Length: 252
Image (cartoon, rainbow, N blue to C red):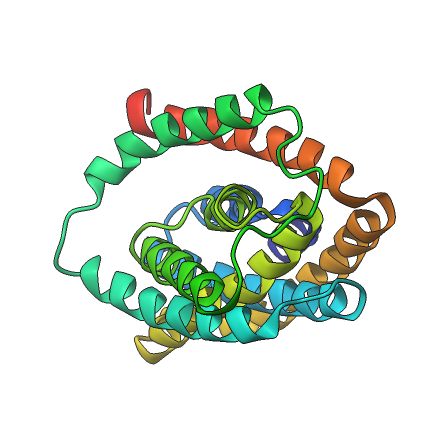
């Protein structure tokens, strides 16, 4: 029964994450609910062992249908990987409690801005070109890679928002770019967790397969319905993240 519950949660997480990020909102709480006595690091590591495959699969699917700007995205993925390692190291020496209370406030600002800007992310009109575009993408990768390693919730959604707001991508192209960078940050975290022995490999394969299956469905819907659909899902996921992180920070 435990395997069935977390496998279904992994599939749903892959579905949501493939569209707009936020899969950890589903799988991580499910792991904590099913295994309440397990070490948190082990559950986070096991989550990464599934999510890295779902995001990688989504990135590959998007790259076949969306015009990915590889000259800026590949360096950004490298900085994201580096940031993920730095963040994972920082969490061992720095407190993260301040981020727990700040996160829901930042997410509220993101949601309000997205709702206020009705046309935000509806059209793909990149604002930067050449080295400036690469530098901006790398800065996003490094900053959110560090955040993902240090704290984590909502990383995929933050990637989408910043590619829309800073680089002028529409939501579909931003989601495609986010998958590539989020794969790199997930991989960095997974390597660290695996080296330290914080992965339940007996669950990893089933969770990974389920996550990829959900990712397939999610990317199919995103590619079929386009930027407007991704924008709606983004608003729903960010709203759910606000409720979850707000509860964790101020109520629980």
